[in-house]
Amino acid sequence: MDDAKFNDLIRKIRQIGKEIIEPNAKDVDKKARFPYESIDALKKLKLLSAYVPVTDGGMGLNVIQIAKICEVLGHYCGSTAMIYSMHKIQVACVVNHCENSSFFKSYIQKLVTEQRVMASATTEIGISGDLRSSICAVEEDGITFDLVKKAPVISYGADADDLMLTARRTPDAAKSDQVHVLVTKDQYKLEQISKWDSLGFRGTCSSGFVVNIKEAPTEQILPVPFANILSQSMHPFAHITWSALWSGISADAVNKARLYVRNEAKKALEHPPISAIRLGEVDNMLQLMRSNIESLAKEYQKMLEVNDENAFSNFGFGIRVNNLKVSSSQQMVDIVGRAMLICGIQSYLNESKFTLTRHIRDAYGAGLMVNNDRILQHNSTLLIMHKEEK
Amino acid sequence: MSIEKVKRILVSHGRLSSPVDELEEDSDLYNAGLTSLATVGLMLALEEEFDVEFPDSMLSRKTFASIESIVDAIEELNG
Image (cartoon, rainbow over all chains, first blue to last red; front, side, top):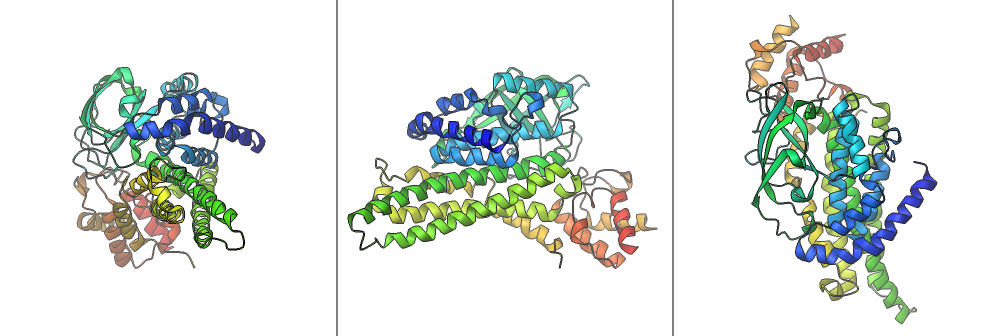
């Protein structure tokens, strides 16, 4: 999509942000409920298929543009932005890896016309958060497959139309020999096993479920090993779009801080408030955070255009993607915290023009979803091998 | 010659869940249980055994994905 059309789309998203997403954000947060109004508004703009190529009926947006949408949504409601990002990661997995499959071709058509919400179940009870391991296995008879997966977390699992899951290829396969499957709501049953009453990102409704799939056609197993889907699509797409939406949450906090300083400055322009210095500091941090995201998003977009499979599996790229997630999640906590210092006690109140209570609660979730320590441990292993060229 | 050495190193450093002897030369080692930590040990052992150094461009999952791809990489490095 060209810049003029994309800017017009962003203007429309800001409008629904102001009129629908933000006014509902407090209720979504308070009740830890799915943001129906926001997602419906996104569906009306056909944004759930925005990453689908134009030739298949979508908007053909690239990852840089999807990240921008996530950032804009982050300004209005962190949960809505997270749901949109997680949905889009699933779309990318299908769009990037299934072009030769007739089932997935027709699925993409359904996604475009019905604006279906896609959720993901990659983690599993007993694998300690390691996405590249599965205990559950696909049991197929050549025509259909059954699968039972105990997932400690499926964000908006109860409200999604379709679900993508990882599993071992066969009951005899090694735990890392994984496939990725897509099933529609009529093909699985969910049994809720834990409740999502969390500090932040409450509207993502990330409860735990046992997923029971019966007799789903084998053509719904993605035609590429999950390892490839993870390194080429899921991993970079997730960390770029998550970081982008976190930068939106952070930017909204900085905007409140700016407004606060401006109000203070208006009272006595000849004596600028001391918090103005902090505003300068936090604005700089936001710029660093954005630059980091933009740089990796551009690198990834270029790799997608060149489509060199080897480049995606390069350990250096994997390390940079991980670094982005770790630093963005930390920067968000830091930036929102500093914005709170600027706005003072007003930011600590739930009912205030300068409230940042939801922002700071959301911020602390980012380092825990795919735990930063686990990511750093993985990077430290890869760094024993990886070296920078001179 | 290289193949046997690579297989021997895989036995001692690959920590695979299936026996190396049962693998084909193009079998996917990650599907056979090769983890990123084991890849590190494997790479260090290969560098020592063959007296080579893997450049950044070869440090990818693809290089260590099968016995065949490892042998190809070693041969390329040995010129």
